[in-house]
Length: 218
Image (cartoon, rainbow, N blue to C red; front, side, top):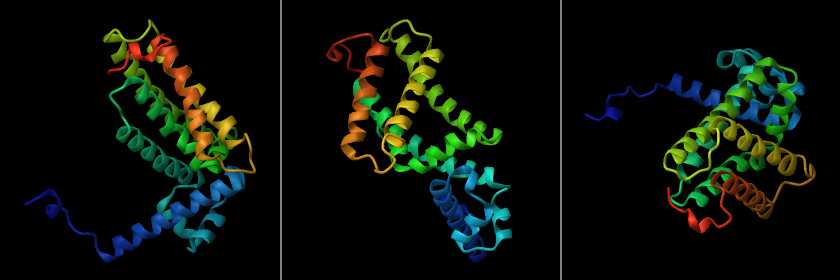
């Protein structure tokens, strides 16, 4: 018997609850993106989801919890995109990592604005932001440590370098792709130009070379 066969099938009530939660989460995503953090409310979310006000509290503790769950889903998406885009070539790997990160800012510009607004107003939202960027920076640091052990990178402090690289990518993405032109969604060409700029700076800062052909393999 397989693991799938051993798992009990959800009943009708459980399936309805899962569908309601998904609808509420989608409504929360839309409201935060459209209205920002402060103007969003439980009432506007439940109205968009076409559910009773009290139903919100069956799935979220409060507005900040809904915000956290929205970004948890985005974080899962970025991690999966990054995992699927890993490459053997070091430069291509940097490009893939940067593209996965920047794509979120292009796909969810309203949510990125809401995050910046929210972390100035709520310690819980600030904690969400810290957790997200710490996870991203830790992955970079671990990769730098492996590359250093392999003799491929310059003598950098992995944690400090990872914080600097993630901050560069994060703030460049926000200022260039989110608020650079609030009236227009960045084009694919603009995204790729931003990826190329950041990847070039990232690669040469870490590997300390001016010709990437000298270091290509993981």
